[in-house]
Image (tube, rainbow, N blue to C red; front, side):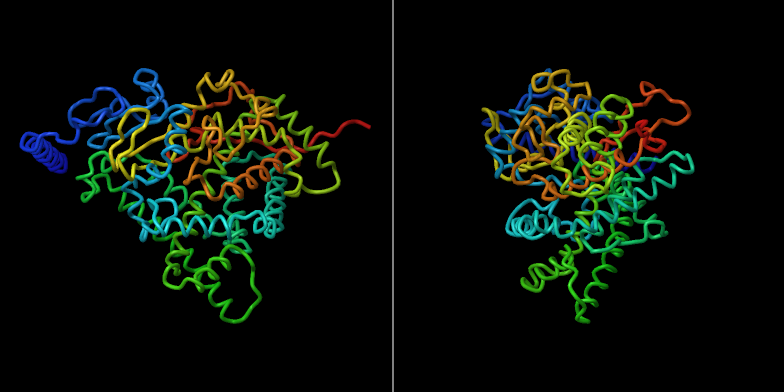
Length: 504
């Protein structure tokens, strides 16, 4: 109760202060600005009650009334929302440089040195150098090819784990399985070996840390809606997430220390991401030290694990719900791979239907329904409207995925729509931008696509699948849960069974 009165007093103080400033100073700039239209809000809280806890859906409905480019008030924070492919193109292509900044959630500021992050840096020389490092050193096709044997080892481990569940006739939490596999895939690519033993307490801790960071970062935070509350952290989110951030960086520091000792001893190079980062650090000195290495590794882990596991869980859910589509995918795999060998990454381009399934999953269940928030770095004109400097900009990818103007029967899971289409992952078709678009498109796109295809192909090729307890496909719960990623509200449990073979 005491906290309530403190907050109420603060709110009243700042409201009176803002009103006084408006009376004394007037609105010399706003008279000449034409903001995008939007819903009328309530005093103090703006449109928060209209947005609710499913903002991707509520913003889609509001856009039908106020237009594909609209302004909403989230407490004291004005936000411009783009809800169509045309408006996304305006933001990501025509005004990409002006809109490339980042609106940083208060929770993220709990991470030490977050200003060095590739994800949250708002541009400038530091961000440019990090993007160049990623594009020319880390995520090149050559680099990814050199490390693919490590990813194949992780796939063999995953298949063995699922085979144990098959033999025991046990169900598997698909999201958990893929989360651990993604973590191992990333750690092998970055460290040339499993970061932690898959069954160790440390790996369990890391899974909890990553999940906790994603949960807290996606939790609605009053400090983001009322900036004057940031110093008080009224919900304790920043204090709570800092514990997880700090522990994650401790684990990464251990890996960095091990590699430094290895390099100092004259041991052979691993040729992985961490070696590349150390080479870059030695070349550029203080501009890229171990703090930068730690933050970049943190970005890659947080950005690459939850998104992969969420997408695969939704893909398996849709395939179990649509047995005919799963059968087509398994037929393609059987014809392409045969029965003589395991799946290799060079097989993946020969699997167009699998590719279409992943695209359709990312369309219907975008991992980031509201792409990471951008910020106008300068005042910018968009379609006759003015977006003031430092305004937060949200692009509603979920809204575009549900729009019948771009997709035939958009609510249906139809991979065939991508078979005769040139739509790809790289952000050129603005109705389908699962990895973002423009200058801030995900730098790990190439690795992410390989991981998605490799995991799904192995799950389908080596096993048949059924639902537990005699559940029928149409009984699967399809509700999602909004956060940084759009997760399945009820985790998918599926039972692996031996692949049926045709009679001789």
